[in-house]
Amino acid sequence: MNILTKRSWELPEREATPEHVFLNRRQILAGLAGGGALLGSGLGMRPAFAEADPSAGLYPVPRNSTFTLDRPVTDEDVASKYNNFYEFGSHKQIWPAAQNLEIRPWTVMLDGLIDNSQTIDIDALLAKMPLEERLYRHRCVEAWSMAVPWSGFPLAELVKLAGPQTGAKYLRFETFLNPEVASGQKQSWYPWPYVEGLTLAEATNELAFMATGIYGKPLAKQFGAPIRLVTPWKYGFKCIKSVVRISFTDKRPVSFWEEIQPKEYGFWANVNPSVPHRRWPQATEKLLGTDQRRNTLLYNGYEEQVAGLYKDMSGELLFM
Ligand SMILES: Nc1nc2c(c(=O)[nH]1)N[C@H]1C(S)=C(S)[C@@H](COP(=O)(O)O)O[C@H]1N2
Ligand SMILES: [Mo]
Image (cartoon, rainbow, N blue to C red; front, side, top):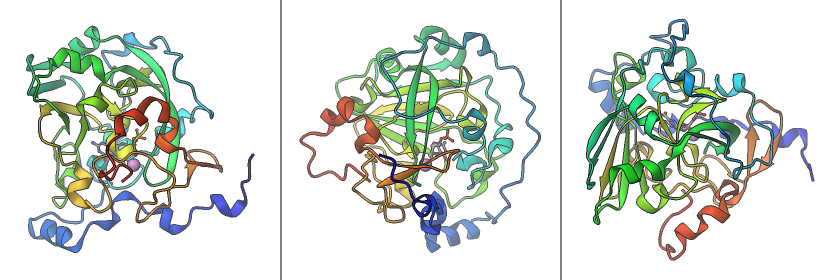
């Protein structure tokens, strides 16, 4: 079963290339001309003094045993120190810089084609929602993966609260915008704020989840506190962090990465081992914190739950 060879898990340089290197010349020049400088991304770091999170008493929450793993849970310390969160730097060790993010007060605006437009305080939202824990796989397009216990609530519950109108077909998610706190947002060649999107059908699929905690505690800031999206059948970049706004619309949102490089990052971004990305073969993945690689699974192993969403969509680029 395990046919690993030493060579197979050594990351070729090609696979180790982070998400951002394809920024085109025009974007970089535009950014520099706009006054942005190639600032060291270590700026703004300060020691991680964790202030008390007012939601700490809510955790741990009961585990929903419907969702099981085929691999061990990734070590918390490993997952907490290897993150993609470009707002705090275009490298993996952003966890110290991310401690700058102030997560209270925090509100989430629900607007667009809904009956119940509102701006809701995060703690009021947490009090309303049925919190549960789910073990999910996470697959980054850079060909690494992890398996973690998220706490949070089904996105479908938030959709219910919003009350979508007939015309609403998509959800458009937005991350906070504050370059003073998140020095990555001073890099003006990126189209801040980070944006992602789902169809309403995807958002109401049982797997779509809003995470507010991880490892039995409130989300640490580097994971996208206080609330982030989790869509485990899609590549990790869909899982937008530190969400401040969710707009219901009739137009397909253009996501952050799609805007930067539409040839490499599409709207659907469903995991498929047999559709290579331009820069990363997708057949296998490195398990974070181990020396192992595993075969990547169609829809990251969630085919049973989500394949139905995509039947009759033959014209769409479902896997990029
Ligand atoms: N706002 C925001 N959300 C983001 C990102 C980001 O840079 N900014 N990176 C994405 C990518 S590429 C991945 S793989 C996951 C990483 O989540 P993790 O750091 O919790 O493992 O977050 C996603 N959400
Ligand atoms: Mo990613």
